Length: 460
Figure (tube, rainbow, N blue to C red):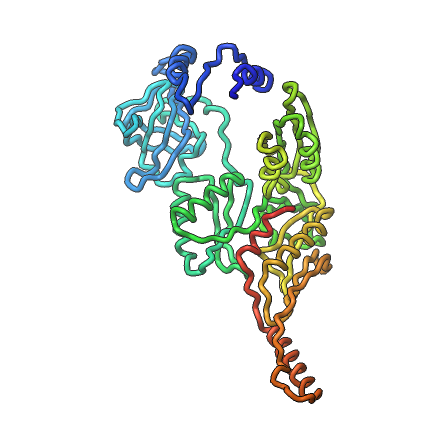
């Protein structure tokens, strides 16, 4: 069922490399493993062992150790790195003395030097992981290289979400957990945030959806936290009437339309590989996400490559899951940022009994506002439990209500104790109940269940 000949042809057509000498292997059956190792030795050329050149080493991973500081995994491209040598991290210009070097095989084995082509670990009493950034170039302070290894750029969060503990007493526990994860993950950003609905929490920045899911799972599994996650958002650029640009990643902080001229959102180039039979459904999915088709090409008789420009905000909800569903798991996707474009975006607010719930606010395109607002409040109506008074749920754009639903009140029969036919007595009891419910509605607070906040994550 593996069909190696067909897969070879697809590799040549899609990836563009010659698959004639491809090693046939199966990790499941343990076939071809020795052949792969032999091929690595014979086909991949060894590095030039020129240790006289200036040091040029790449940091490809790092983590924080309580005793040694930051541990860096490095690959030496040119020169050599020695214990006791002063090194410079080229992105910051800061210098440190190398304390230890070694390799993992699989346990740590200490060495005095790492030469050209070698991969190992290095420590230099670095206390902040942000000073040893993945992708940075290490060089020698005494004999530095002229140019860093190309490709390094500062990591910028692409997706933001609020993390709130279900138990408000766990706030300090969540704070400590984020601090510990941040020691080993320089790409994770977080700052304290307060929500009227959810209390104290943190606004966290992630590289993407997968990064967000991993962090949330680690917080819950490793630190025994129960969390509410608000809908993921992206960074919008708001340009006011004076031409000043402000970045907004929290919908509740988006200014009113009369205070800005243009709002821009990030776009990504989405590359989709799919069997031909699912092409129509994928076209419809991308169109519904405001996608602009840029390219379509047949790589084989039955496999197609499609490229779309799509707003990042449209794929952070459920794009990937929907893609897998409509293609029965056969389609794959990749995306990369391509910059910002102006869009007709508005803030959609959810009001419960006339009070806006900041954690349920979203930024959406004007054309989709009514559809999303209606779907969201219908979902909330089914999730919010009935109270002793009516609960009104509204979707609003500014001061305009675009959709409304209500959760009917629980009814208590206050006339049950009236055995006679005294109509005036019954009327008095009903009026008294009505006044009591009115006062209750004025001072009552609705307990919104956790599932209601997850409803915002669904984009259908």
